[in-house]
Image (cartoon, rainbow, N blue to C red):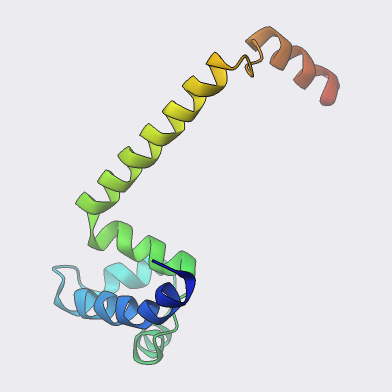
Length: 108
């Protein structure tokens, strides 16, 4: 998917998110507390499709918990693989060095 396609799909994604909020088992109060905003502001955000990126991420974690868990597992797996590659390439620093550098950096 190219950048322009992603940008144009954003409206569809937000529209679907709002539909899913409306049909979810959660009450509106749950989302208000989750985002820490007033109800009038929440409804305005829904009407104008003006959720911030952070709000979309937070809402999606709660609306789609299985997909979020799959995403986290995939991301963690990629990070583990990257770490293994770095270890093989000798790009690792042992714990004692990290501890000593931290002590010097923070004068501890």
